[in-house]
Image (tube, rainbow, N blue to C red):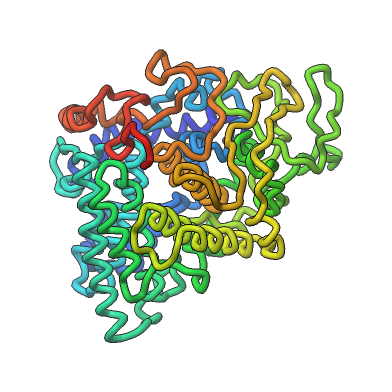
Length: 551
């Protein structure tokens, strides 16, 4: 954070103390403790008040802060997805990057999901009977809380807004079934609404995601249904197929090239990743991302990542990477990422490595580089995988895969490279070379080309790899899909400090249950551990993360 995360951890600690003293637990007596002190009831406030919060909390930036997002996602999923890495020796290198979990960091994903998604959606459902508003509220709840359950597994869900001092957890299987029920209901309601009324933009003045279009909300919901269907394909294949085919078969369909990405593109909303990477200098591009995109000679790389030289010294001169002997490596203009999970030197030797593409200067708002909630290209890759599995997806696997690539290239203004890119059958990921420390060099791992072909496993690896590239920098979804499929093949962390929870060379599966929940909702946490099916540690797989082949 500003100079180091430790500074703002003091703020975090104050927040947690306040929670312990005044809120008891995020899942405890919510209804009493979060009543409006002015005396205004739910019905007294405009709906926009409640809709703004969950929209801005799917990819958390509702407070226009930054350290919250750093703790909610950046210091876990963004790292574990292979997208990003830390150049900072947080907690003397005993931190999440090395699987030495910092308990005080890992509560925020749950707490903020409950506070800023579940709570306002509960208020919306209490304050309106309008079918389109109810549908959109439930879509937002699924979008936000699906990210939360995919971090922990069981979480407080069905009972979390009912008050009380102890709240039971729901199994992830039950939560997913609830997601599918909510999405089906919402999709049916919006389909009926659009059939009868078309788009009614004046009804959606609160909309920050879908261009005030009921049809776009409907297509987003269908695509979200398809995404979650694919997540459960290994544990519940019949359910996955039924949900996926229903999403694609809806008369308004899923997102296509005619639609814009679903994202909060708002001139008044910060991009917290910009602050973390550029201003705090606590976040760089990951070595796996560099290896795969450089290997493909991917034209998107320079549109997604800033090369070395973005960081300036006090004389406004570009800062080069030096080697261990202090010699310049002539890396300015090149993309260089960082391995995850090693003892970062306390000096700033990694601070000038490449960061995600952001505005250099004083701009802090996200209108130019908004954080993506769902990219259109993802819909094509999801359909490509469905078609590979023999499902009815409105196209064959290869054509859908190629179209996903085309849409992603077009997003970055490099569609002219499409033919050469999709037909290349020689280039693969390249070896990673660390200019500062050659001991961190590692041979390439993701051994597939771009051109579609091979057996089903190879085809799936190509589909997931290209989806992973296209979704950057949405690390939560990328981490979930990596756990589900094992793709793309990522570099393991260098130093595994999990005390045996994760085998050497293996990868983290989840975050442990929250510190404040263990303190303030122990019975609830006990119910969650029982539903988890394993120890409450980072090596226990989630319900949908079945340890078997993809086919």
